[in-house]
Image (cartoon, rainbow, N blue to C red; front, side):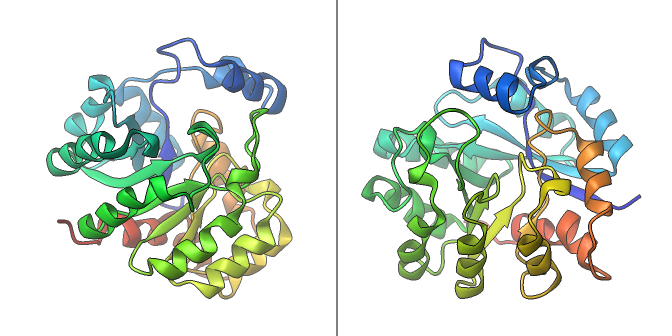
Length: 272
């Protein structure tokens, strides 16, 4: 069984009534709402990870209302779980102070922004830049959703081209595109070739549906650029690992994809 680090895992999707757009994507797009809107205890999630060979997982908390239930995951299993923090850049310095408190006191390895969920602000908007500069100071990578969102929401804000000038202007900022880049895969790949600080995680995208151009990039110039992520339970750990093993990857590339690229990006970086 290969080893894996999952860069996007949800622990508490069953704790509250989901917004309408999430219900629509679960029912109309993934067609498995009952399996998606679930919550897990740390022990339950570790058992599922063990069965799939997932050694570590990045679980997400909201910066403005950090869940004590989610914070308990790395406290109970510090070798298995670390945190990402979802940030709304429209909240300005208040959001940054909340994030700083979490970075200083919890095992935070990633900040997350989802443009379609923050008023459709593209990541090139000025309201993101205080977050970007702080993340450079803290040596904290930023995850930015790219590609048309699955929910029925406007998606032009997630065109990867919004990252072009951003990567050029802030070469010290480590950026990870999230949830793939459909239908702009070729743009995302070209940008990753162009910028050393730009990467992509495959959250919410089943490996058997990876486009040929992405698999080719993984085998060639992008061997150290693509990171495994499931968005579990949206997509199951075991399914994603199994489908990743079936990809036509060159020797050594599967381990880079499933484990090593994430380990290098999130577990070998210095902290503030």
